[in-house]
Image (cartoon, rainbow, N blue to C red; front, side, top):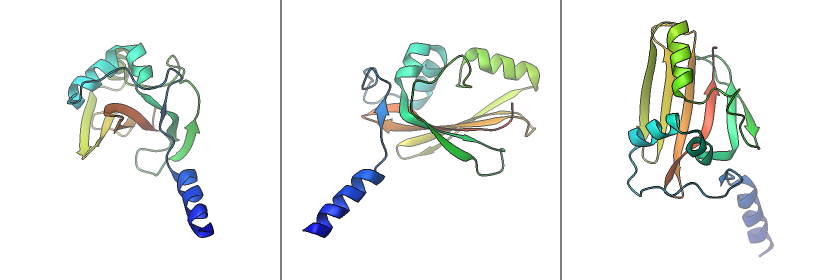
Length: 146
């Protein structure tokens, strides 16, 4: 029984902490919310965007080709200084380094959304989303470039 207790404690310590912003669970979502519709809403609505970030948020800084060093952000993300996906950020990047490219790779209940400067390695950010409590949510960001 003692080893069972230790195993349970270890499992709880190693389990990912999937807590949303201070307000609690995400804004209500449709059970079949499509990822493209979600990303469009995520880009355009700051309040919605903040409600769909899992804290602590894993943030990595590194090159587009290397493995980033990950840091956990345990508080509210300052949307003014953090390069989240926004129409303003897209316009800024598109104007500074030529064309902005966006791609998505899919797995069962997760998506990687990648924004980069087309045909260069100047800029490339990967945003990792997972279904949490049935809703799409940002769980990790890997930053590289500008």
